[in-house]
Length: 320
Ligand code: CUA
Image 1 (tube, protein in one colour):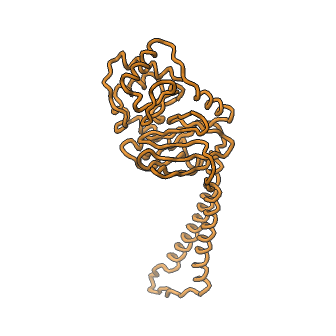
Image 2 (image 1 turned 90 degrees about the horizontal axis):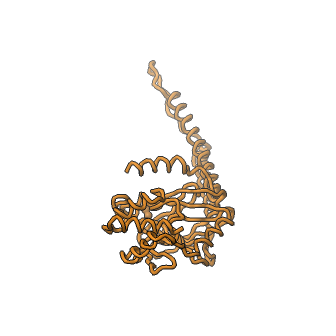
Image 3 (image 1 turned 180 degrees about the vertical axis):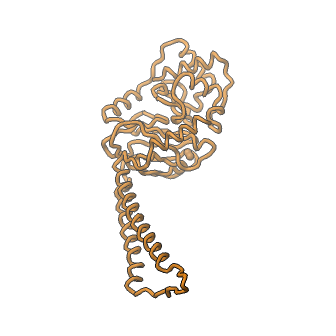
């Protein structure tokens, strides 16, 4: 619980929405600052006018009071006209921004298809055989199209530094355009309440230069090789304990779709959408008792003996 709390603090300090990491976020933040300046101007005018009125029409000890005056027509026109003009101007600025950051995706091929699940993210790369989970690799320096789907309830994609956000709705196809400026790790979170582990449904984007991105795609099309004997017995336990009913591992009989694809789980830096570091200790804790780590997650507890868990961990840790 405390770990989660620290994560939240870390999350909000590092992921300021005002830090634009995509060209879309730049546009949104530019509009945001136009709004902020206009609102500050209105606040200033109203504050000065209020102070003036309070001072001018204050109570006088000698009993002399100012009589309220009726304003001239010019003032009335200005007081209606200026706010109206601001609303109209901002309405058009907003339409312009929306049009620019979210053009139609009709007939366009998505670069990545992202499916929200309770409580993890699936990323499928069209034109390749790559399906990844939770750590979503994206290229920088070009505009890419994400297609957003849901396998169950409504989720919401939001990486604050990317600016835009979009719901993932069952039975609907939503789209989002991104042009990420710099390589790096970007974190976000599901932003639509989707159940017990909504707060544990993090987003982790690994933004890479085009060449590294292509290399990552190529590596992930390969079947991971396992060499040591403990890992090999882990592979058998994975089959016999029916892990493959929910999880896919390329090159094996496991082809489940309900849980995250584990074909290259060892190449990820984190587990459980970024809540835990990916190491043998955490993997062991997770398999031992998933509900203790992420209460409400759909991964059941398997009551395995220590040797079986060690073998499974050795197997999964070898899937690079
Ligand atoms: Cu998925 Cu909230």
